[in-house]
Structures are given as C-alpha cells and as structure tokens.
Amino acid sequence: MSYITPEIESQDPGSNYNFRYKAALNNTGPYMVSGIPYVTGNLTVPSGNTVAPLEITFPSVTQRIHIHNNSASYRIKVGFSAAGVKGTNYWLVENHGTNGKNTDYIELRVKTDKIFLISDDATHDSTGIYIAAELTGITDYALTTAYSGSAGIG
Image (cartoon, rainbow, N blue to C red; front, side):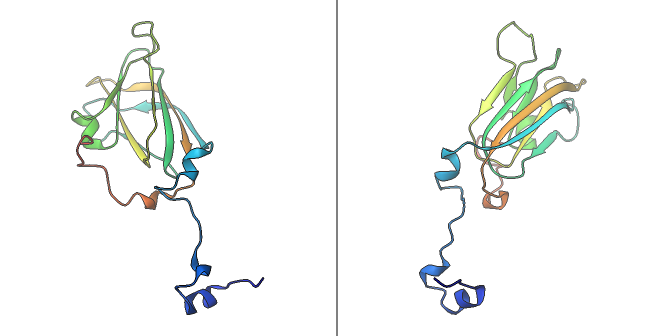
C-alpha cells in the first residue's frame, strides 16, 4: 500500500482516496461515545442590568452541558444568545437552597459552541456558578449559522 500525498490527491479529486472521515454535526459517532470533559467553576455571572452577559465559549461543539447554580441568593438565566438571556428566551436556574428541591441545576443535551449567562437580579451578580460539559470532536466552525436572532433563541 502506498502513501497518498496531497499532491497525488490533488491530481485526481474524484478518487476514493480523497475520502477522509472526520467528525461532523450530522454524524452519529461523536454523540454515541463519551464526550471530552470540560469543567469550569466558581464563575461570577453579571447582574441583569449589565450591558453584556457572561459568554462561555467551548473549544468544540457540545454534546451535553450541566450548569449548577451554587449561589445562595440569586437565580441565573441561561441561553444561546446575549439577546435571548436579556429578553425572554432563556432557562431560569434557581439559586442553591431556594426551596429545598434540586432545582439549582440544569442539564442540556444540545449542539452548540457557546452559552450566555446573566443574573436574574437587576443589581446583583451571581457567584458560585459551575459548568461541566461533554464535548465532541467537532470543531466550532461546523456551526456555520449563528443562533442569535433565530426563533426561540432571541
């Protein structure tokens, strides 16, 4: 078996030698296996009056995201665009100990390369926010369409 160099590939672009499998958004492989771990913690999420929410950009497309609000006092809004969390398109994650129930976290099974967080309180930041995600091997350039402005995103 011979090695196929880029020069040989370029001479016959229609050949089977050009096929190179790589992870992509519509392939099932990256979602069937355990994800690459991504963890960040003790984040401070800005107050609702702030100009810009906290943007978390992942190194590759996510398979699953777990967000835990360990703040003792303030809820947080989680969404997929800055306009969404400042508007009406977000999930509200209760603060730790709000009602004694396990409502201080959310788990999302979504394909995205970023999320936005902002405090539900207009004047106070939320502290103690933790994020764990499972990442695929899909690079973020595969998400060619920005979600901002889309229906249900904001």
